[in-house]
Image (cartoon, rainbow, N blue to C red; front, side):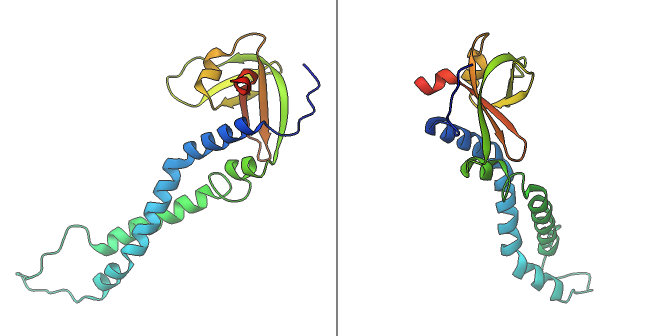
Length: 172
């Protein structure tokens, strides 16, 4: 290992790391946003549904749907609350992966490649350093091309997550 005095990732790797983290949280955030939008959009119809008197006659002029707007509102509201509290500090907010990466709240080190997990067919891919620490590898080609003697840009975020990229990627 060389005595690299850099405290932060090179700018290109910084952007790659932030994009990878953003892409990995996309599905979670979309469910959160859509459930919030549904909660807001269905609030007025749900309140009307609660306060509308129901006819007890056998034949009604107004057909009721199987799922009332109040029930849909409850589903959206519960989904939003669960996802919101589940995601604080993990997918968004202070000390989340993206927050730590953007604020450069991490420890950056150059380490030698030690191994990699077998191909699972889908992300995330993992690599190891010589000490055996497991890292997320945000770039598939870095995982694929990693071999004995390769050097890794290793990042340990303040929340404890580990990410690594091949050093050669910076030269491209």
